[in-house]
Each structure stands twice: as structure tokens, then as C-alpha cells.
Image (tube, rainbow, N blue to C red; front, top):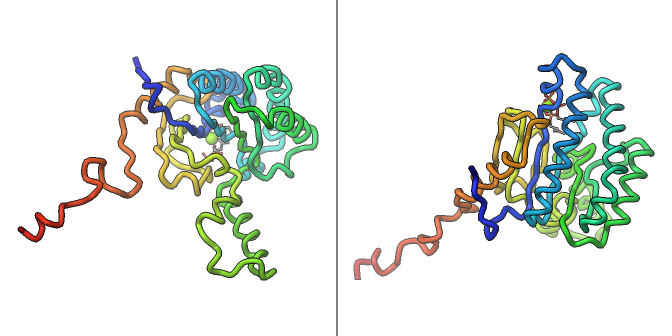
Length: 254
Ligand code: IPE
Ligand code: IPE
Ligand code: MG
């Protein structure tokens, strides 16, 4: 049983939804069956986060590297994505969820891009929760894009090299628009980041679960949040009771 304190929620949660393929293979089924089962998990976790009052949920749905998978798997994933965007449209709008895509969206097939753009446009002013779908997303690629933009501004004489600051780079990263993730969850048992939110992850709390994504229940989400709430975030400092360090007078012995 996991008890969650509603006063100390991770406001921004990011999830690497991994393990669909293995879930299907364990059942002797094609991988796409696992992806379909995984899309049901997406629905229940989005609802749960919305109910809890999470401000932003970022879901790693398809990486830039995933384009290298067999064409039938990629096509199947794109079809599922479009189905999700069409079927969830009403619920997303009714729940005042703001949906957006982050990643190299130009690479998505036009039919998927269009559904995404329509829903992003229809929900752009919603304040309920931001649902960011990382699609054709890569953390390195996102940082390179931002660096290229800054380099162009320097080349054009609009900025000097000293103007290339952490703040300016952050401002150019779509994944950082609402801030860095507080809690990053990865299902499926792998202990790696796989090119997700590299910049924002600098001080995120990490939670790894062995559960394969199609089996991930709301209870598992609560487990991750409860674990987050038991941790102390320090951001490179010392714990709260010691934030000022040793008292100088006691060091001098006076
Ligand atoms: C995650 O599940 C979904 C995507 C990457 C699109 P996988 O398809 O990677 O599942 P496993 O890791 O092979 O089990
Ligand atoms: C990360 O999972 C990408 C998504 C969940 C969309 P992968 O299955 O692609 O990552 P690796 O290959 O195990 O690192
Ligand atoms: Mg995987």
C-alpha cells in the first residue's frame, strides 16, 4: 500500500514506457500486440496523473532512434499513435488537458502530424495538465538543435559567444518549457536513459520499475510517487538543516 502526500507531488513526471515488445514476446505474440496493450496503459496513467494534479506528464512514446526498427513495427506504432490522438480527443478536451508533441515532428507521417497538430491547437489554452508526447524525440538531438540556433545568432552578430548561457540554451529546449522533470520513471527493467530528456534530467529523481509497460498499473505509479516523496532532493547542496554550513564563530573558537 502506497500512501501519497498530495502536498508534495512531483509536479512534472516523465515516463519511458518500455517493455511492450517483451510483453508480447512472452505471450508468443507479435510486438505490435504489446504496443497496443501499452496504449491502454497510457490512457490509465494519463487519467491518474490528471486526477492527482500533476502539472506536466511527458511520455516517451517514440525515440529518434526507434525509426531504425523494422518498417512494420514503425508503421504499426504510427497507426496506434493516430488512433490514440483520435480516440482520446474528447476526453483530453473535456479534462482541459493541453497536449503537445516534442521531438523531430517533421519526420512523422503527415496523417499523424495532422492529428497531433489539430489536437495541440484545440487544447493550447488548457490549464489542466500538459501532456507532452515525446515523438521522434532524442535528448542529444534537442540540445544540438538549440546549440545550432545559438550558433546562428552568434554568426549573425545578434549574440556574442559569452551570451551563450545555460538560461538561453534552456529557453530553446521544448522539453524544458514547463521546467525539468521532478520524477523520471522507466518501466521494463532496463537501467538506462536511452536519450530521454538529457538536459532536464540533471537533477530529476529516477525510478526504475521491472514491470513491463502494458502491466504498469496506477498502483505502480503511486509506488513511484511514494518513493519520490521519501527522498531528499539536494541539488548539489547540503541537507536543509545544514544549508548555511558550519558557523564561522565556532570555527574561530571565539
Ligand atoms: C517501448 O517498448 C515502446 C517503444 C520503444 C516504442 P519496446 O518496444 O522498446 O519494448 P521492449 O523493450 O522491446 O520490450
Ligand atoms: C526508449 O526505449 C524509447 C521509448 C520508450 C520510446 P528503447 O527500447 O528504444 O531503448 P533501448 O533500446 O532499450 O535503449
Ligand atoms: Mg525497449
